Every structure is written in structure tokens, then in C-alpha cells.
Image 1: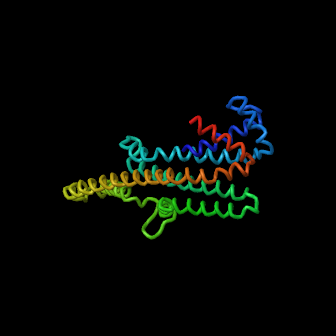
Image 2: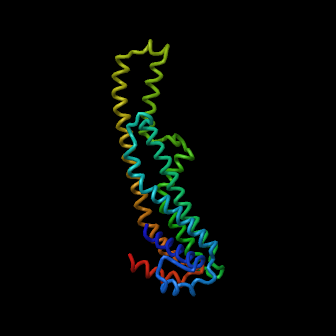
Image 3: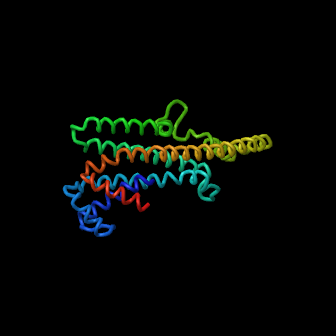
Length: 256
């Protein structure tokens, strides 16, 4: 995500100059930046850097979910339904975490803005609401999984449920004292049908969650860079590197 990388680079260079009096850029440009970096809030700068790095790591993981949902199946060690459920759980948790990290970053900036900048504080609050609304389609799915309502719960995905049910039935019918009483001609005929339906349901679930993960990723890629671009000046202003950031931004964009 380019905007995130630009902000992180600017923070890194500014801190480097403050702490070492040098930077990755040539001496003349570094010398031009030095007078603009007095009174830098290094503690807050480091906090912003950490928050942005967390967003980068989670985003890179989210990029992999469309592949995760179409791979890692047909293993001798992990069943297909176990693999699907693991990826669903992990995906929903990571999307939720990403949303909370973005909202937390905006909240941090809002708290660091001087009290007299009322409009700026209100603007960040509006942006936070936009973020929460954009994530709602996915986080609402997570709520249904983690906070069960009638007939729904964590394992409510139809594909994995059907596979589990058919395996449980087969296991039960083969237990001692039961298997001797079973009409196996009928059962085998029914199991063939049920097994085919369960496999199809699992395949449909895999396809659905592949689309869900791709959709969430698309939403993030369409939304977050614009948000970061809009709030980047607030980051620089609260750290006290606003003027230096303008020079650095021009240099970085020129290089790229």
C-alpha cells in the first residue's frame, strides 16, 4: 500500500536525522531538512510507526486469503472442513483486527490534536465512522459466528457442517451394536447421495469465502489509501514534522 509506505518512510527519515544527524539522502538535502526538525515528538513518532507497521503486516496477510481459501486442501493430516474453518476463523479475526487498528490510529491522532482544532477532530471522527461502515458487511458475518443468534453460531457454514454431519453419521452407524442392525444396502445408497451433496456444499463454501476475502481486500485497497492520504498531514503535524514532510514527500514522489 503505497501511501502507507510513504508515511512510514517520512517518519523513518525524520527520526534518523534527529537521532543520528544523517539520513539515507545526500548531505545537501539532509542539511536542508535539519532546521525543520526541531522539537520533534519522537515518542509519538515511534508510536505512529508501530501502528502503521501493524497495518502493513495485517494487510499483507489479508492479501493472501484468496489463495488460502483455494489451497491447502486434500491433506492427509488436516481435513478439508478443518482447513476451511481455520481459514474462515483467521480471516474474520484479521479483518476485525485491521478495522480496530485503523480506528485506533484515528483515535490516537484525534487525541493528539490540540483542543482548539475542533473541525480537525470532528473530521477524524467522521472518517472513523466511514471506516466502521465500510467494514460492516464483513464484521457482521463475524458477529454471527462469534455471538450466536438463533440457529447460528461459529460453525454455521453450510459446507463444513454437511461434511461433519455425514462423517458423524457414518461413524455412528459403524459402532458395535449398531452396525449389526443397519440396512446397509439402503444406507450405502443414501450415503452416496449425502456425501456428494456435502462435497458440493463444501466446494460452494470455499468459493463463497474466496469471494468474501477478495471483496474485503478490494474494499480496503479502495478505501484505506484515500484515508491515509487525508490524515497524513495530521500525523506530521502532531509529531511536529509538517514542513519537513512536504520536502520529503516531493523527493520520494520524484524518485518513484
